Image 1 (cartoon, rainbow, N blue to C red):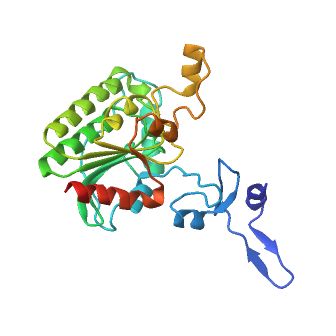
Image 2: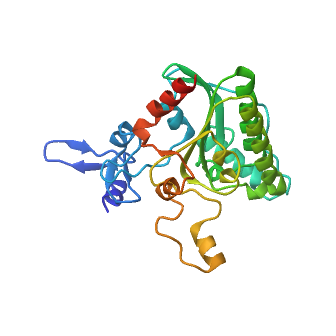
Image 3: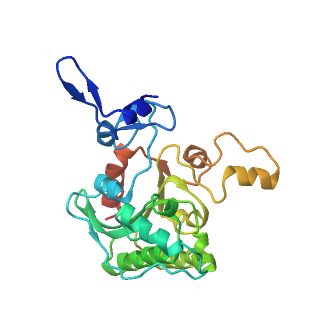
Length: 277
């Protein structure tokens, strides 16, 4: 493979000089196996230039794509992840992920401008325990919803998650009710909520706040559901329809309102904010 060859050698001798081959500057598309130059990929909104596959984004890169430069201000929420089940290594894992990802938990929340329109914005990050919803994630999202009500600002939540965080047991599952209750208060206050589903959005996140948006958008080919297709197939003992749980399937069946390509996401959200302002 090309990547293997690049990893094995940093330099290639040339008769006249030595040419540096940058290592770590290439990435392979999971869908079409195309080898892509990272800088070109990032310039294309982290979308494969060959097949259109939408790569998963970190919260930092998502905010950079969506929010006007220099306008994002994260909420200062002083809460820490707990270990209610006393699972060996859990808190050490959390600390390691904080260092690796540069964020404190699996969601980043704050205020910002989208083409000069103010909004509260929450972005989940799949690099942090697959965006699983523990007590801190649930609290940060609930806090953000309450701030949206207080500030009278629309809220946009980008979801990516494997579901509830099993390491926190019932406390994790309680976040479904807490976030859903907060969304109900938001609705009663007449505040716009745009939910954006990205690949993958599963479990307790899908079963709570992610599915309660006034407007629900999704990125192309995103996998969205409660349990995975394999689990469902084994449970009911039946073959599932083609494309089951893809964004396209859910759009056809009325679960989401629109599929939006990443390059169009900022302008689409802006138009919705402007229309409802």
